[in-house]
Structure formats: C-alpha cells, structure tokens
Length: 137
Image 1 (tube, one colour):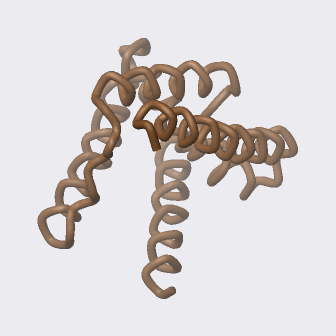
Image 2 (cartoon, one colour):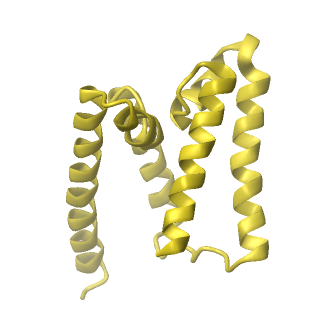
C-alpha cells in the first residue's frame, strides 16, 4: 500500500514541478505532440520524455522489470495507434486529464477520465473474448 501511495505522490510531484517550471499541464500526449511540432519548446519536452524513459529503465534495472505482453507486436502497434487517436479525440490523455485535470476540478477532465475508464473496460472485455475465441478456448 505504501508503494502505491509514494508512486502516486511522485506522479503528483512531477506534474506540479512541470507546471511550476513551464506553466503547462503535464499531459504526456500533449508533450509528445509539442515535441514533434513546436520547435521553440522541443528541448524541454524531449527532456521530459527522456526522463520518463530513463526512470522506467532505472526501475527495470533496480527492481523487477514489468512483464512482457502476451499479445503479438502487430496488435500492440494497432492498440498504440488507437490510443494516440483517442488522446487527440479526447483532447488529452490520462496524465493530462486524470492527474492534472481532476486535481484542478475540471469537469471536462472528470468526464474524459470516466470515459477513458469505461472505454478501457469495454475494450478489455471485448479483446479478451476475441483472443480467447481465436485461441480456441
């Protein structure tokens, strides 16, 4: 339980530091978009993204690495593209809406986060049944 508490606190701290330093919400999809499109802020956004990757790698080296996905690479690529499309359609991702938006009591972010959760639950239910049927289970 403490690891979850400290992990959540670190996410909140990171979002706060990013907001204080840049005046912008720490939504990862927006940061990626800005890193690809906006030259004047590309450096700070690439640094943020590099930090995300570096901490993930550090956690894998120091702790136990996350388990590999049982799904084929092609399925994961399609899923990633769909998530990217969904974040643009929803005006942001779970980090922007779920962490930063809800903490600012944004009604749009609360609705978006509830939509993400519901869509994720439905997608998992459908995908689980499809893969079980394809595997002949």
